[in-house]
Image (tube, rainbow, N blue to C red; front, top):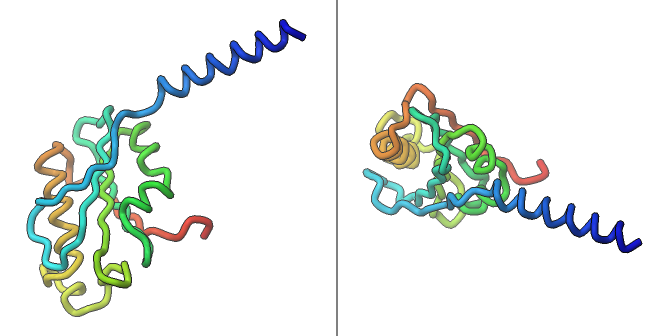
Length: 147
């Protein structure tokens, strides 16, 4: 019985060292000065320590009533970024509904002056500061966890 307990304790210790050794030191950072932002969105950015050269960019757009930091916590995009080396932008809507503008004339017009303009400023910021490529840009609309 003591031998089994020692073996289990050793295995648990080894597993905890392995898990601690594979965790990322990268964190979600808020970027406040990323360019033209007519609708006052907030920008949160996750850059993995093992960022790929010419890293792809993922724009993870949260669901209504959500936020960038909540979507970061509720999704696996950051963990996958650690594995595959892409950069994740988590825009955050600041209006009371916490929804992005996807239907106003401004949002539906190129450079129209609403949320899409702020999100493109975020992308431009990442391309300029993290040597990422436009050709590898992906946007994923958020859904509530469990949906």
